[in-house]
Length: 93
Image (tube, rainbow, N blue to C red):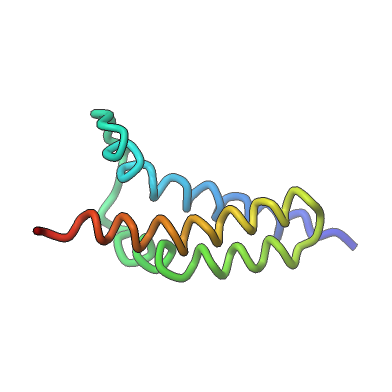
């Protein structure tokens, strides 16, 4: 039995994780674009970038299918590579 609501939720979380990386990616390419943001989600944003992406990636892989597996791998790689890299780039000095 398929669980489409569960899959849609995973896709929304995947897109949200991409959205969280946009300011750093725009800065990396020297683009002066500032995506809309809100302070209400600050702690959820931090949790999503640090561990939520890895958990969501694992859930996508376990959801089955080639597309979900590919998205899961991309999600895990983004959170394991991009997050530490952008944190180190943001440190002073």
